[in-house]
Length: 93
Image (spheres, helix red, strand yellow):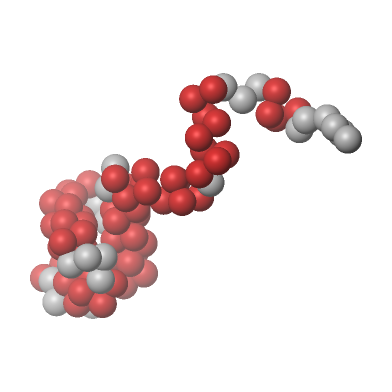
């Protein structure tokens, strides 16, 4: 027995149907593919350890840590080590 359709589904565009079928897995894969997930992880870790947001002048350090995190197969332990052994961390603490 058909009970109707969610109103939000009425406005769904065809290109977004894959998001429903693949769910959060697709969202995570896109975030990794575009480097958003590693970068966000690094920003949050740095904020927690440094006690502040990274400034625009520290973009190079953020990129360095993000690359290191990605190339270490997303090892959070290696990320923590990279941050706490950096000159930036030593200046803040």
